[in-house]
Length: 97
Length: 392
Image (cartoon, rainbow over all chains, first blue to last red; front, side, top):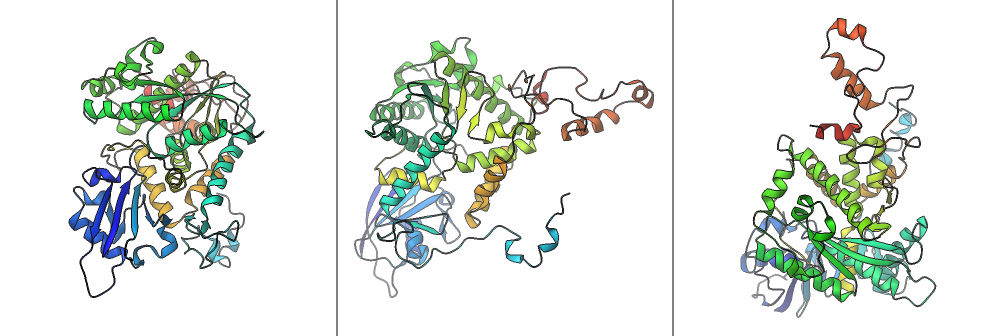
């Protein structure tokens, strides 16, 4: 399944300073939800200090998640079922300021 | 202790504490217009569509400024840039306000100031940040002055250290030591921060005067103000809490410090920037131990409580808004310039603290001979309770 994962607001500093990643998620029995994606990101994209991005089974407070340009709180946050070609953006509010 | 209303607590069990986080309502339209599909959730419950969210944010900014009616047309305003979402959003709010064609147009003249102090980064990285700031401010078409804390504290004339181009500002690996040396190393981390915060503020006021600005805008948001308020109370600055936590800090006669973003939270401003396609200048933050200073600890406390109790910050702010300076001050602190408390018929908590100290360091004979309130400021200096620890 193809999706786009993007980082902004300084979150990209943890991902080799690369803002946009075209990602193909491997097939699996169950549907992909955001919680699974976070683990996948940690194992495949995250370059340093996971504690600045993840906390427990979610993102660290202070990192906003937008699914197709809308707040993930409208979509049950970590339980959102990812669809083909979704655009998932992580904006850090923790860097700078 | 006040006990009014205590007896009702059992019955109103749900009101005893702040309400916990709610799930957004399943109603799938914007809270405001009830028509469009929402794209953002604020305070963990209120959903807004793009249009209503942006209109609401702009309105809040202008209402905060308008309510106090302090700024007059053509007044010069020094806007402090500190990197990150709040600063970028602040510049955008101002630019769009100035560019309006209606009667709601903002009519002051902004000048932007950036004080560099990222001494934990390499000189190359710091230079990149300055360059990015210069570019960002230029995009908004504002005049910018760049300077650094290390330079400001080592010069007697701030005007020679204000630069319009990033390559004019010299940065040195040694800047960190310059700042460290400036602060008394006997002080603990909390007091070092306190000292530097007051120093920064005094420098900003000095620069504002030099640039003929009557007002200063800082990019402090609600969380900053709430943790500052709790910090001030714990550091013995409770009597002047309204200066640091209110909308306007009026301790200087000519230059007023205003906090136009004090009712915004970070999520709101980050979304505002995202929807306006603005990417703020960011940098790697210093790794700070939250248990090393009261300031850091209060930030951690407020921000962590806020995650599950979205009313935390507003509760602190609304309570803070009810606090104001007592009598009209006649005397001001020599260091922080805040009004000094005058002796009243009843002892203040600062005086009580000083009394305990005094009474336990005097012999009975000395105590008998001492005039009334001798414990209060025995050296007769002009410092407030919070600043006395800086006295050498």
